Length: 292
Ligand SMILES: [Zn+2]
Image (cartoon, rainbow, N blue to C red; front, top):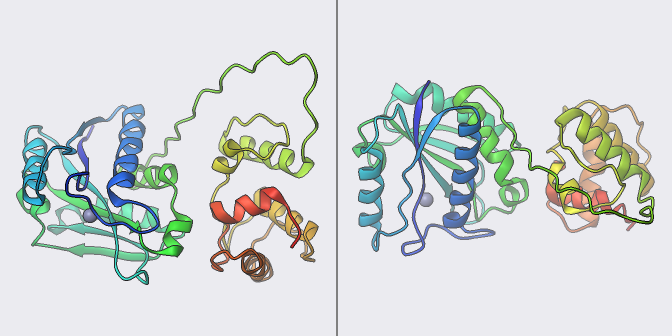
């Protein structure tokens, strides 16, 4: 089984890019989630993140020396990109074509989350890629200063995509549910649509949500990215909810042009990015179900 070295880019002394979120912080969150997921699939993983380097050079040298302490098959560097706010999407940087399969698979898996696929790029000038013994790739997960990317980004789905691209396997970490507190009186019945969504999320994705019809953070977190081309129960529920706030879609469970247009109008009316993609921000409004 392959052995991986993984690290988050930069550190808090010499921090990375900033925008809608911090590269330094989120690269650490994604790195941690990737490590948990790989470990739960029984891969050996070393965390080669450097939090002590005081300069950029020190940071890079420390990372390389940690990487070279282990006989790994691949070094993985987690970063987020930034430009002028207009750039968006995922790209994976590699030193040579030795890593082409992993780099391309990871890039494609992240693009499947809705990010623009900027492809795999060869870079001979990057310190870590150049100086590690084992082959190395650097994942620019998406742009932290892009409104589009910030709307699509979720640490867990990003980490799952990286693990899927790397290993071909998907491992969702399911948080154990805390034991429910004894309740002498039954809870209020909640929203029937939310209840049916919770049931569907449990059925399709093993979300293990309490089916209580209550719009809480766990339910929002369990909602997947849905966009044009999707089919099935989740799309059907989205169409139903859109109709309940004033649209008149055919409820057929097919995310086609009409549903895409309706989502864009729904987003426009709520000051969201009008990309037609049902991501966390759009889900938040769908869960509320408020008419505008
Ligand atoms: Zn970076």
